[in-house]
Image: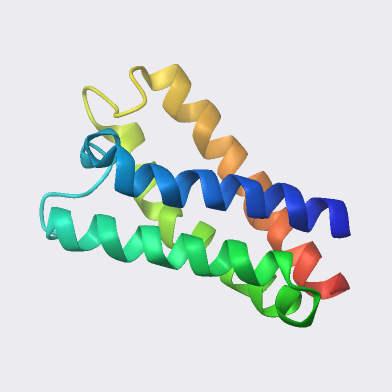
Length: 116
């Protein structure tokens, strides 16, 4: 399970950094009702905090819970994106694959939480 924590931490860290160095990439995924700049910063900081928690053994269980919660928060956004004429992922097929992966990530985070 420790390896899974490090894999999840790497994913979160890469995404967190992406929110700050390439915020335009995430713009299409942010619903119009959410303030784009603030949402981008908040998500980036949240992802960074989860990544750090997953790396530190003392906080790994909390990090796994944070991962699971973030994946659950992102789930409706991915469903919404799938229903759009032009998904942010570029195609309906890609958005569908991302949605399936989202369920795997939720399950993986929950299992990591249980085992930590």
